[in-house]
Image (cartoon, rainbow, N blue to C red; front, side):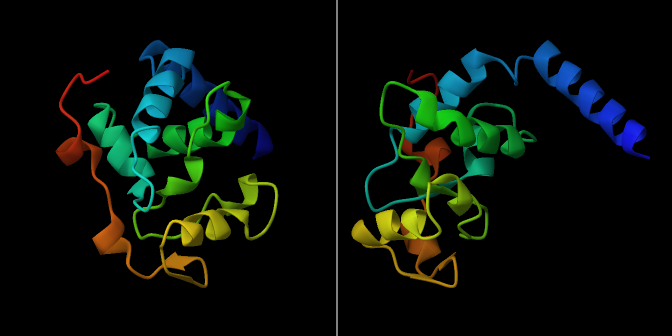
Amino acid sequence: MIVAVLDRIRYFSRCMVKIGIMSKDFFQRVYEVVKRIPPGRVTSYGAIARYLGTGRSARMVGWAMNQSHTQPDVIPAHRVVNRNGMLTGKHFFGGENVMQELLEAEGLLIDDDQILNFRERFWDPAEELSEGSF
């Protein structure tokens, strides 16, 4: 069973590399979108993936966010949440409540890891950025 799961992971990784999703270039493109999210606004992993033309790669966007701390520029990864406004990436911020505190400092209301005013604060890169803007 474990061998089968590992084989699937290896296969998936090879496929992602072949189509360019798991490349450093893909992560850089994700970071360029995230750097454009205004303070006080949030977007989702899937919205970024769709904007980049890789609509089924929301998890890869999440992986990019997990690695964003290694970048020389500040990447506001706290502004990327799941499609329902949940703080699913909060464990990658060096403390249980760091992501929530960063968002609350920007005016977002959060209760039980859920952004309460998610629809009002949602920033869609497909609507806010022009195609090929970077």
